[in-house]
Length: 167
Ligand code: NI
Image (cartoon, rainbow, N blue to C red; front, side, top):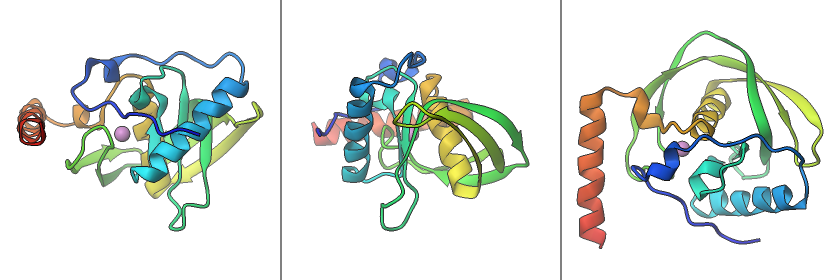
């Protein structure tokens, strides 16, 4: 396994739309394993392949306390959504920024697992937020793009300042 570098907003590669995986083979399983290691190391609760500059529709999520419930979603698709929730979100590609985003309260998702087997999942609360956030990444959308243009430009200015300080 290997740690992968995570793209930082506003890197334009975060806006690429990921393509569907045609076959869940060993290279996809290696990507899943490397993404999981990168997510746990960061640490974070979700990571999309887009964030590690691999533009395939692959997501890893683990919202468990003890990091024991890795969920890998290949070609995830939201089949149904209902309700509304507001959650403060952060993102490994937007370090240090936490903002409230409105999303669906419940989602039903269909995906392939790491063996290529199809499965369906119903999620609510934090897991539902995480799934929607990661699928957004696959579509080239970063969570701050749910915010007002004013807030987005403030965030970009803050990140540019941080980059200058750490450079
Ligand atoms: Ni993110």
